[in-house]
Amino acid sequence: MPNSKRLPRKKRVTGIGGIFFKSKDPQALKEWYRFHLGIICLPHGSAFFEWREIQPPGRTGQTVWAPFPIDTGYFNPSHSSFMINYRVADLSRLLKQLRSEGVLVDDKVEECEYGKFGWIMDPEGNRIELWEPAKANRQVRKARKASRDKK
Image (cartoon, rainbow, N blue to C red; front, side, top):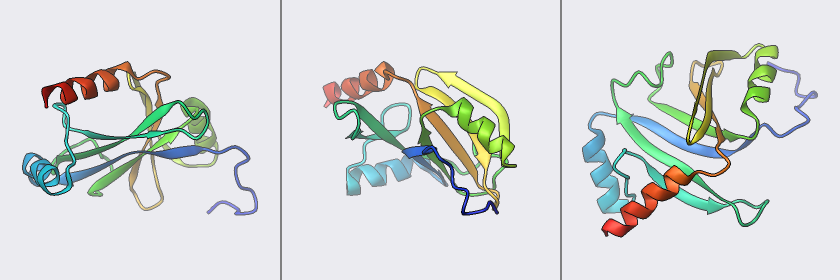
């Protein structure tokens, strides 16, 4: 365990980007959450909760919520039934720091219209997804607008 007196100088995680969990029947579970809690998933399978950044105050962000099939390989090598996605400001810098601290870091980094993604494992074997959001996430806004227009 790292020495608690030597905390990182710079904030590493800026918020929770998403909560992903395994489900025996993702479609039925999405319908249950829609009916009982009003959580509506977009056609690609995730729901988004929008919020505003404190700094700068006009910028919006989102937290993603999504059930995955029970046999998904997306959480591998973890055997956990969940994976949390944390928002970060500078993914490559953080992955480099974590490697130097002995954290198990996946060599794979993905970049898409949503931003950059990297993965690490905690000491108990839980896979953690790190996400540096794209500066302007037009794709998500477009999907949300299309979903609202259908109502």
